[in-house]
Image (cartoon, rainbow, N blue to C red; front, side, top):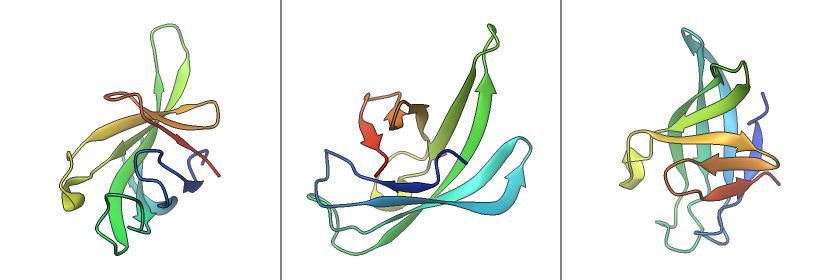
Length: 102
């Protein structure tokens, strides 16, 4: 999967986020998890794991987008935060934040 790997987040410098695919599926979506170090600025200081799902979405024009939907509720965030593969990493649709793959 294109999402497998480790990312950084400019909003939390010093932290890193590793996407790991799981062998579980829900229809076309594959379960995955993000393991964060928790050491980024503004984070809680201990490791965390976030459930997510990855999928391929095909639009009306036939363009395929790799999509990841992350549940940040365990860290006080939204239950569904969607990002798409964009050039060299994940760009989140809601706030346009970009996580470059390392």
